[in-house]
Image (cartoon, rainbow, N blue to C red; front, side, top):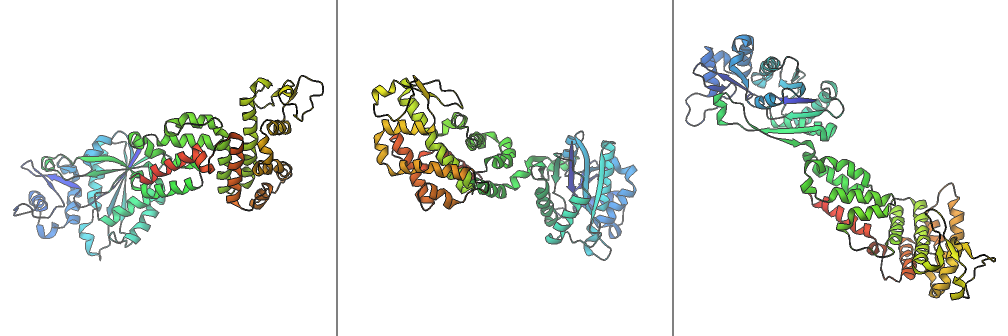
Length: 474
């Protein structure tokens, strides 16, 4: 169901005079050469004294006292059509009216009785509809004082307006002074955000025929929050929190799928990447990515280490940095010496055939009289050093080998590890040296010539695209 909250102003009520024309009860302006205004037409038709009833509050108080006789001659001119269209889906309507103390000059323009008339009209329209009038000004609140009225709205939202979880809220803020409407808008959005919808209304020439004003909308409350949401999204992306970004942008994606184009898909792909589901990541985002290389996953694993250290998760950074090289070694061996490697299943070491010794007589592996052995981590390193002898003189690869003992020590540290522990394990002094060591170590095996992991990673490219799309969205 839906609740509707409307601020009631002096232009919200129209009355049908005996000639059949409809006039605005509160419009006391003279327009287009008129001799008398619309409000005076109403006063005259009712046979009232203009001196006594020439202001909005006393005039509407009189009409309220005669409501049973006059109800068929009364309509809410601004929100009437919206109320008619939404009547069956509304569970509760709140009418915010002014009801100020006697010593206050603007009291003569109060809308308390106009609100009561509209409430009466609504209950005639739908006798199951709950309608509540909320009075503004009884405690000397000034509707034109934004700071004061903002606090009033905060209290009103909490104490007087009941909103169920995920219930849609329609805000109609045409009536009343601008400060009251703006305070309602901002305070409501800060509490209910995407639950809120706005409608805009226009005065129309058909009002004179008893036809309420047309409306435009709905305009989602999220539209008014976009600058703040965009800033929050970009801040979350600085920490690669794609799950949170997806959640706060979901209402915008649903509102205009064409405008956002591929952005929701790229965010979903990035969530897969964060989970280490690189194949799913690529399949979902490949239309926005450059062609992947043979050993692309190793570079994604290494870039994950970079992301984790930026997230201040040093332990995860250590594990991903080691895993990127270890995983690459096995994939490279399987790709280039598949004739000697068999029986590899997920989460199991493959087996290495003894016949490889015929091609590499200097291979330092003991087959112990067997035709094949399990190709575990250290055997993989011995094998790749044999088939790629240039690695023996590569200081970055040698640093990786030297980290193995450090890795075992650090992995069993219940207190976690610091950045300097990680750098020391890799034989470097700082973050930049560590990044260079990682990319050079991978390049030494793949024979690629990437200058940085940022250049090598597909995700880094995608991350930049997503940030740019959100930053440029109006």
